[in-house]
Image (cartoon, rainbow over all chains, first blue to last red; front, side):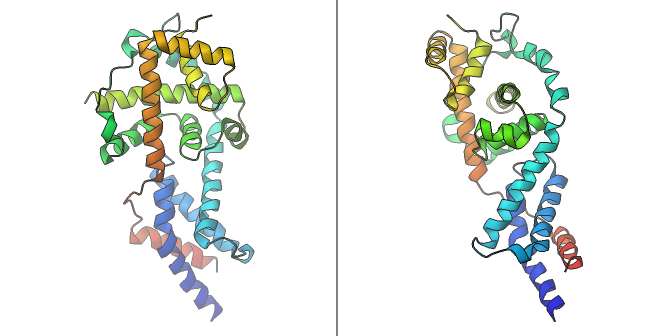
Amino acid sequence: MELSRNQKLATEWVNEYANMLYQYVIKRVKDNHIAKDLVQDTLLSAWKNIENYTGEASVKTWLFTILKNKIIDHYRKSSNRITEELSNTETEQAIFFDSADHWHKKAFPMDWGTRTQHSIETKEFYLILTKCKNKLKEIQAAVFNLKYMEDLSSKEICKELNITESNYWVLIHRAKIQLRYCLESNWILK
Amino acid sequence: MGINCKTAVDFVSKKEEGKLTIVQRYQLWYHLAICYLCKRFYQQNNIIIKGIKHHAKSTTNKQLNKEEKDIIINVLKDNC
């Protein structure tokens, strides 16, 4: 009897919350398979710990708390490769800045005109934004997402990802330059 | 003392978090007043952040299909 009730509850949970969790995570990780795995891990983790659920927060809030921790765990794995990621800094920066550290002629920020005023809330913008965000290195995207999608401070991000503050500023600097350039090339100039 | 464009771009991010000293704030302000490229970067950066924040809160119609949901249901059932 107990088993059959639990099995019914499992179905209800998945039908009620899986899409909500998936829609949240898909904007925050590059890979669709990883997004699905994180949804499954979240539900399974909650399921296994259901006895610890106090009912103080709603099931939805509880699941989202678990999911956010899973996403940060996923980001943290990418920070293990930070030395490798940062080793290319000079080469990549040379694309954007000349030897005097002024904008390289090929990378001059263009005039975006008035196009952006009403179009940043459109589906087209989101598609290109996602495409450009997916071009960032994992650790750059992690830092960028935590900063601008999760509203964490640099101090919190450094702590979560176990990176130094100077590495954080390098990563956010590069992420912004590359994202702006990609948006300009794929959205403004098209 | 003047700053170059690379430093100005770096200061734009630090300014968002109030991490600039008074001198650095002045250096950035002065650089943005004389460098139209960095001024563009600064303005476009604000547009991108606004777009990202809106994107974070927006809804999408992406959904798991029945088969994908069934897999999760079975995983949970196996752990009953």
